[in-house]
Length: 97
Image (tube, rainbow, N blue to C red; front, side):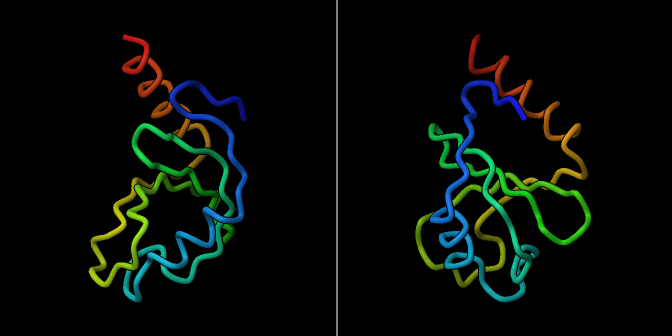
């Protein structure tokens, strides 16, 4: 996948570990294996591929602290890579404006 600014490729196991550290029991993403794909450093958002056989992607706003409230960390779920690309293109247009 080709990333457009402000997103860039970042396949970092440390981001996966951070997500696991932050996500409390009861959170939608709790217990789902993921792979980090990209990062948006102006908002601390990470794009993860969910390794659950669904093909879904999640853009997660990391908080860099252990959370106890299932509302955190916030995220947007994408049913497919095509759906994610539409969002990335919109982010790019806004970033370039």
